[in-house]
Amino acid sequence: MTAVKTTETAAPAGDNTPPALPPAVTGGTPRRRRRGGAFDRALPYLLLAPALIAILWLIGFPVVSVVVTSFRQLNLGELVRGEIVWTGIDNYVTVLQDDRFWTVSLRTVVFTVAVVGVSVGAGLLIALMMRVLSPWVRIALQIAMLCAWAMPILASTTVYQWMFDQNYGILNKTLVQLGFDSYAGYSWFSSGTSTLSVVGLLIVWQAIPFLAFSLYAGLVGIPRDLYEAAGIDGATGWQTFRAVTWPEIRSLLMMVTFLSTLWDFKVFAQIWVFREGGPSGESTTLPVLQYLEGIAKSHFGVAAAISVLMMVILGLITFQYLRRLLKTEEGKL
Image 1 (tube, one colour):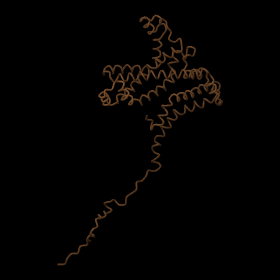
Image 2 (cartoon, rainbow, N blue to C red):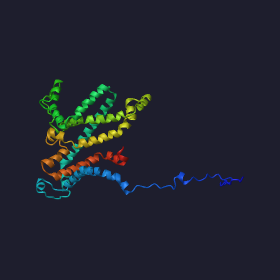
Image 3 (tube, rainbow, N blue to C red):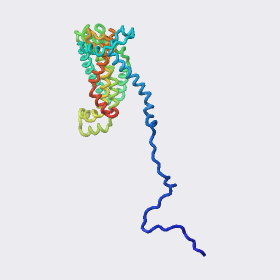
Image 4 (cartoon, helix red, strand yellow):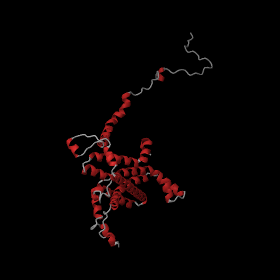
């Protein structure tokens, strides 16, 4: 019988290198990952472009138009004739040289700071109170705030006019029945300070629901474990607020304060409906002054200059928030 020869060759002794796998197992030559083309990289921006263009048109165009108008002489005659008369910075010089502008600006800033401080403080207190109230009482309070929030501005302003009316107001009658006879026929709108006080009370009443609901939403998100740990450590209520509540809602509180500043700084309807900036212009604020110059006197260029200066003043008031907002990634404080 003839011996059969094998074709296998024995591996050299001492060589522990594993045999190479065939290309069918390894998948052949490794391929480099292809990078996306220019179109793939630009696709997200192309998808966002329509919305961005719409936002810039709706917001940017009016701002640019106001700034351009502030450098023009645009009275009723130029508006009817369609003339374009450039005056440079004359409108700004006219406004800044007017002592009334500085008085009104100071009054507007003081009024805004006072109203924002009271409304944010009251909203925070009500939000803290809703956290500890029973469910039924909390629901009743929330429904009442929703009704106040849903009330139209002109309707609520009219109600406040009736409440503070000199002869028929419920407030004067109630004070007289309580023994304050000096309030019989008392006029709450005899001075600019008292008029702005009534207007400020109305604005606070209208602003509290939004602030309370917003801050309450932030309080609900705070883990109860933190309060339990503070209670175990023997912290008082104030210490718990400083160590637990305040750090958690500080960013939210700054945001609603910023929004309230924007809204209250440009309040117009309430002030105008009450006394049209009176008596004797003592309750006139910058939005009312802008209306008087632009609509009543048809000095649209001067009114546009006042608008630009209003934006500058508002930017200075909110400078710290804007600085932190721009420095923080994606606007997160």
